[in-house]
Length: 140
Image (cartoon, rainbow, N blue to C red; front, side, top):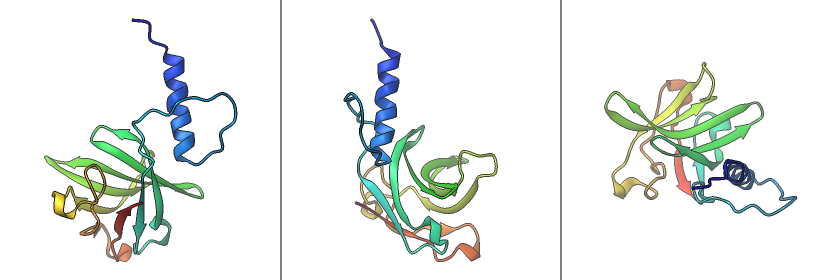
């Protein structure tokens, strides 16, 4: 099988550009389906920078990863294991060594989920009291 790694890399790069809203210039490259164009809106968090629109920036081991950039900081929403339990986490600068977990939520049952593969609408908790109130989310 002849597999073109450069073409695949170009498709992933273009998908990230589309998700980040960058204008298209140059030859057309199809966008792969791993990134959803649906966005997660975070509202009501005690940390103002957390509130806003998160884009599906890729797939992690446990599902979709949503990101929001604010100045020099990056906020992530993703599922991670804590022991044997899977949780949603909203983190600041999660790719750095000094990542800070801000909010958490249980991986929901269907009645509390926005839909499969997206964070729960409610029932978020804060890791520290000064980060309260905890946010709510919705898919747009």
